[in-house]
Length: 460
Image (cartoon, rainbow, N blue to C red; front, side, top):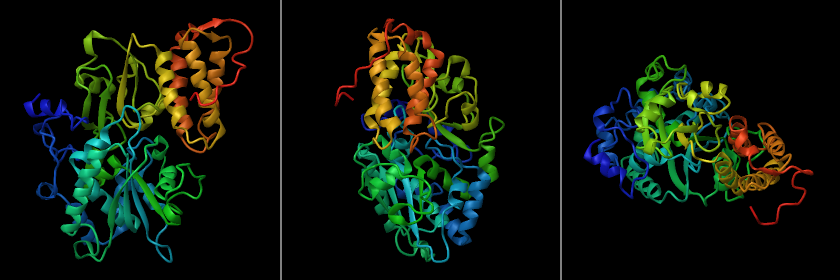
């Protein structure tokens, strides 16, 4: 590892660490990170312009066909990197525009609050103009007249960098009125959130942006038909939008080829690892890279620990086992194993870690972050915490584990207004599936029905 990368790893300023030196990153293979410097300094506009910056916007403006952008995104099969994996091109094609439809909004979801996830922070803190360029292209495709970067409030450094980069882009004519002499008007503002996990859900984000309580909205209508302030709106994740410039500049076939024969999903992906590994951090790798290769790049488990389980993409994904490490990490393959790719950042669990304690910690987070709009989430998640605390303390009762099964099932997909409760249920369901004996060891009262007493008010 180079000295500059080593110093970046230990810097207080940069906690999202790319562990690939400049010499290993190239424009044709690393569209997201090839411009980044080993010293971790920000790529401001002069350097960005020297490195193919805003060429894709110039190409799109010269072409003058917004539908061509959408067609290219569809052909490239750029799937949402925020966790859902929905086709960005298809999403854009559903935005109402034309005729008497008002111009709407292009919103970047930068509310990166998924536990174990730190990829978007890297892009915003070190390469802000890539995100800005991607948003301009998204605005062209969706006929958006204004853009918002809805930023996690704790990302103070990202806010500083993004606001300076927006000023640079305006001064250079890439934002504002008549962009690059094209007649197209578009500008962007940074909006910092108040710190709620639920704002990662696109309609809750829109409500918060409007100054309302961050509750999800019932769909339909979808944001593409009626979003922010009732106008057609598109919400995309930071990494998704950062893929757009290279796709438009180099084409769909090139993007698809980046993953080789690993998967049908094209492109590259920011993968990462956190937990007790030798080198936690980030790598830009072809989509479909295996968990084994990522863990190897992280130097393996720290201190001769052995791997017990792992989450493939944040706290709201399902646990996988060591034998799943050889699977290609793409959206469909991971889904077939009962989990989700999510954000693509692995969280590893060592053999000595109690799964009951781990799940209690995760469910406390999800219960605390529920917006309280729907019953399974508002009432079910605190009950899971109560039961898990009892099991962790060895005070569980007969029927506790079966009740956990039912609570998790009641929070499943389609039973709540948004994906918060299903996200909380998935790690619990998979932990009960793979490590049920650990939960059974917490049952010490084989009598009566489980926990008839209510949850004390204010405990969660």
